[in-house]
Length: 191
Image (cartoon, rainbow, N blue to C red; front, side):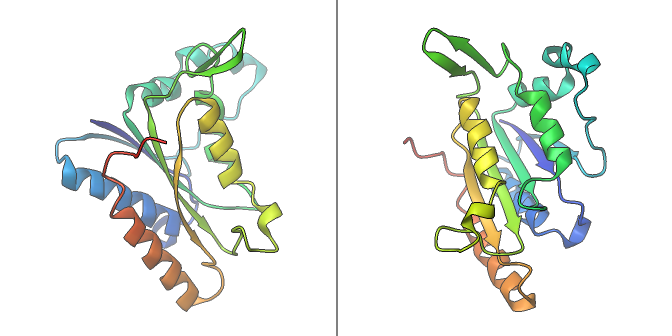
């Protein structure tokens, strides 16, 4: 098994999304100790944003190769200004490549990454779930769900939210997310 583990939070050791993504990877390693892990800290080494000059070479880039070579992709995603960190968006722009991870046919888009398991640990300072008056402000989970579904994967989310509402709320949200992370190493349930 090959696991691509990405972190994007700028908060380092204080990051809840990093704690969640690490817990997810630990669960896979407990089940498959010989899994091959490729770790990338997108905050420490951010991919360059796309330019006209780099657009034509994306299909040959290392980011799309790492993505395609992995069986499982684990992403730790912070929530900044209602969406994902720009370094994570830059990485996504480098793996959403026509002819590699998606294509078109007479019926529309065809996702070419259907064999990927994508698990995202998302940390949000406020509460943006279904019952929240701020639900329409949430553009991280919706963006990543759209992109990875477009690529053919069925993304799974472990979300810790309300972490900015005080230390007790942070501890409680992180604890619940880590409990949920303990079950991810099981094979995904077919939809």
